[in-house]
Length: 204
Ligand code: MN3
Image (cartoon, rainbow, N blue to C red):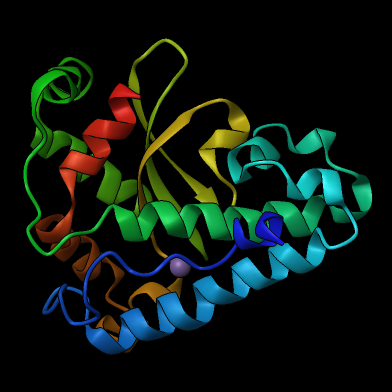
């Protein structure tokens, strides 16, 4: 019973209107209650006949996708990735925002020169992702920060990096409010990034 519960939809850690005006209430309802929920449900369906895999954490499932049985590999990468990436995305946002501190800020300065350059590079990577996907800030295996984009629901965890901050650029993340202005959504999102979360992921 509780093995299924692991892939249930977590509640949003803030109210639906808490990220206004940068992300609107209607978008959050669709994004969380419909899109994210569907990934969670489809992941559970994909694993319904795989009781051993149901015991695993989502991170374990995505870390070595080549170990998954072939017949469920793609559904788990897509829906498990959607489930995991959206958990990260919604937890990365907060009405109070903040600034990176401590060792995270030191590493940002070491790898990018300053925070503004990181923001510019990450927003560019996300803006230039062709079609659906995410811009990612990650920590690589040597502890350095890196920025890249990945298509669909592919996750940095599957290529050995630690995901720190995802910028979702699927159209469902912004289209109701921003229409085709993806760059405007990406420029506004810096007001609501929860850098404390990013710091905790960096230090973990
Ligand atoms: Mn999304």
